[in-house]
Length: 202
Image (tube, rainbow, N blue to C red):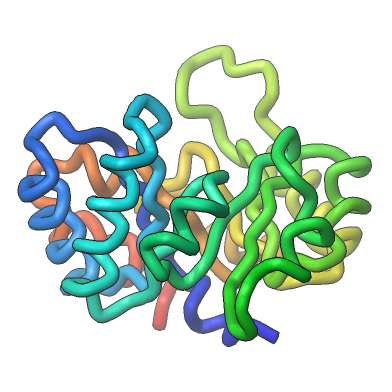
């Protein structure tokens, strides 16, 4: 069973606009700011680059590093675990092939998704808030609360999470939040992370 404190504030990477070293510097900043986990998500990068970045983060960061979707990359880099999209392998299919203690997260946005989380350690539910005006797929906090109950696992809110929206997600039953642009795209990632961590409490 995962320690819920690891899920309090998950920082999700955005891109390599400043290279591997630049991303690593930003990741170190968010860890100093209070992120409890870093989720490596670079969908446009090849596996070799992902392994390189994941290894560098694992060696440098004081918090667990998760890899998005790529079980092979996570294992090759000896990352803490993998976070799976609903269209990827199911947590139950992955679990027998990974070491003890390997963390598996899975995303859910519907009741059907929430009923297919067996084998996972935690669930990321979203998008809870709109990232852009007019987003049609936004769940809102009422649906978030319902999916938290349905999943029956520690749940992290994702989608449009920032200093202003994070407290509402926590009040709806999430044990943590996952944040991308409000942290990794910020001019001062450490300060942005501290602000969100302060907003949700320790």
